[in-house]
Length: 148
Image 1 (cartoon, rainbow, N blue to C red):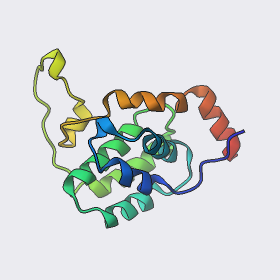
Image 2 (cartoon, rainbow, N blue to C red; image 1 turned 30 degrees about the vertical axis):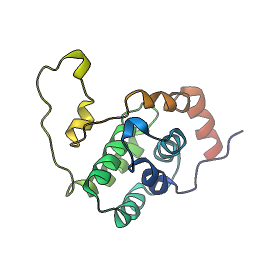
Image 3 (spheres, rainbow, N blue to C red; image 1 turned 45 degrees about the horizontal axis):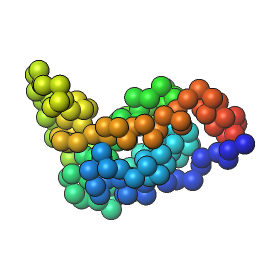
Image 4 (cartoon, one colour; image 1 turned 30 degrees about the horizontal axis):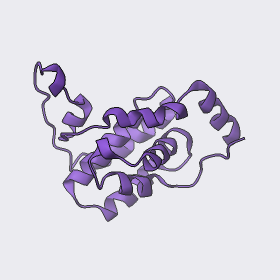
């Protein structure tokens, strides 16, 4: 049986992830960050504050905000956890530059609209496949049972 995911690791995982383009993200750090958002009981607002204290790069802040918002879009994120994540995302609002997605884009030129809204030219792309085993109903049930 898996141990509950209670160690606050979101800010350190984000630290690793934001240093390079997201489509080249380290799979282990990506999984750690996602599991911290989905299954831990860490305070997301506190984690984001800790992250922001260590990072002033606008690009890194936008990447971190994108990742946190992207994690809220998976069905394994509970409503309460999504609400907490949205509060944490408000901390990024000062650094966020809204970029209006362009109209029709050729198939090969399509980009992640969420990434574009964060002013990024890259998204997770196929890296999201690394998260799939951790957001199944079976895995989710194991995590919820372990933390109960």
